[in-house]
Image (cartoon, rainbow, N blue to C red; front, side, top):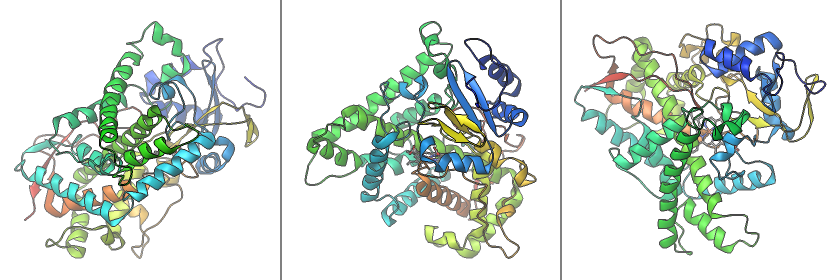
Length: 468
Ligand code: HEM
């Protein structure tokens, strides 16, 4: 252990704390609970060594904000797991860093905005997806529907219109399988990357057991799809009339002098937007339905608000957000209690740096304890779904700075605006038209999540009863 490194459990030669983490994981079932338990023992800056890699787990609002706001902690880890999805290199946005990441992030945002991100046109597209979704639900004619995959294609459609100019039918089998692949790849390990990061040589010995084979196969299939979409664009490219983000990148690639933008790079940017944009919103939306169907009281109040402010004769719009204060509070509460990005996306120290009274060596992986932040003592009754915690006595919305589901600082989520708009419109479109019920004779859906890169709800069914 380097001198002044944050405290943590004792180390074994070669593997460091891997056994401690493995043992605690067996007992506690979730990696974020392992970090939480060890942090309670050793402090808000917990120092671990997993294989040869230093891993520091940072808890509490102030330290999480500090990590997120200092340039020296703006890196992304170069562990094997993070790089195996991007040809062994730091490409794209999510797992890139340095000046290269900065430039790419800004360009992606610029192109996204140019093709409608954050505009009225994007709202119209989300609304179109909501209408397709409520139609699909209507066709189920009061039968119980498993909701865990309900939103997948809608969500891909919204991102993919901007990126690839494409929209799929909600019943499109190929796209549904693509979403299933992404979901599966998110289940193989958690965000710390597990053994694939800390003992990567094991992929040569037990590739199936540690998820290597499965992940490689999934990556292969997703890339086959992305390459096909990019190739289609290349064939029909008109330099004077770029249609979407892929076209804009292809033109940039043609005209660039420094040759930094490669075909691989474009594929990883697409993968980043697809993966970061789909599982996250889908999992949160499913948790949202889960809590609404469990808490009939919450559903009553949501429907009263929707009926009063919107009624039945027009569709919900984003401009309704300023009037649907209780609905906004429900969305915040769902983001808080589910915290699907339980440890955010890991950061990395780019140089040796001081944090509190400790030194964080260059190259240390930094895991941010968002789940704990959102489900800890600050909230008094964190396990209760209580949207009222975000409302003042006068009924105004409280912006609590302990809630940061999208991270904060320069690495914060680029999809926050889109995610919030989608969640608002999904919820209001569905509740305007349907009363949600658990099928008779089945227990309430479980709030206990399934572990993975993001947390997911266990499968459950809902009956959508038409309201009028
Ligand atoms: C409820 C939905 C979502 C949640 C909870 C969420 C959460 C997060 C979090 C916690 C981070 C890491 C911040 C950090 O490293 O400090 C992140 C980064 C990111 N998110 Fe999201 N996200 C969501 C939706 C989206 C959507 C819809 C998109 C894209 C369309 C997206 C794209 C990204 C990208 C590209 C990054 C990496 C940013 C960077 O490294 O510079 N996310 N997100």
